[in-house]
Length: 412
Image (cartoon, rainbow, N blue to C red; front, side, top):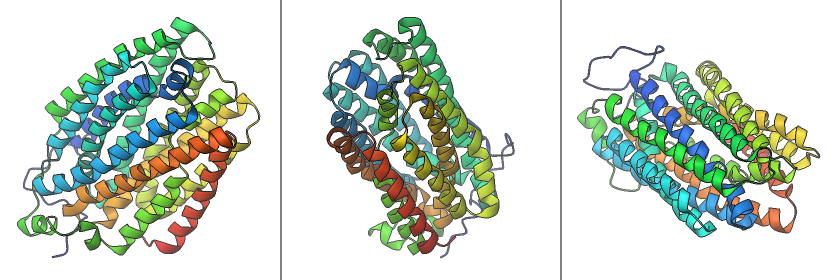
């Protein structure tokens, strides 16, 4: 039986809307906002902690970023498929957010890059459990006509949390160490203590205000419970899209390297945090318009536009000769994220039936996350053995190749 993905099938009454969307969108966005306040305070400066405080190199930074993301990816595949089977997306989301929240205070006592890796592993373990079910719940709570807007609103709220978290971090850094070029351990530990609070609030909001959508009909449910390898039963367009995403992500190493590049160009820690604030402001500002535009013009065109921005920005990071240029590049990097992140997730929902969305998001996030490990290790190796510009040249080239593949190989 073919599933109509344009309208979720459920038995519950239509609730009052917030901003023209199902309340789940708003409250899931609020959960992501509070979580990002916490995560940006605690984990964004990890590459500076590893280099400035713990004395490790860029390869260790790449390993921490890549291995934690790959762990996240494997779990997203599993949790997405489980959420399709049990139709309990909220339960898995609560579990994932809780695991991440419990891991964060441990950064206060991390005294080696191996300990940082272990804590980051725990945080990403939780993120891997929650992300695919949460994205499927966002998709379940919107129709195809407003799906881009729904994901755009969610990403905008998520990124607003990042702005708030980084603004708080900037104040703490300024008060404790001024415009020092390197991160100090006491300032970082203060960020950890403050950052745990919004993480706890996020879990409480999720428990109180978000609810699962109703179960699909029995035929749809059976369609989502294939016992063989489910990737074989997806539309060819979805499988090709995953391959293209893998090509792009192979050059899109951990964002830790963007932060290292800013410090490499002579930017003090306070300036790097303010650059990240600009990055997230541009990300949040563009997310909703990009999502709404994709509802009208099609997702593929908007994704290609975003990848073009990415390629230009990465070329800029490679060729930059002064720290003032990095400010504009961070704004451009935020524009890329705002254009692509929500639209790509909406595109996944367009390409698969409703009953298989959790599984589909698992594969989507899985491909991205698993590719980040070799991408980040390659970037760290290039940084240490060639020069800091080399990872960015690679990323720009692979982004251009991915653009061509998406235009030629994937239909709307």
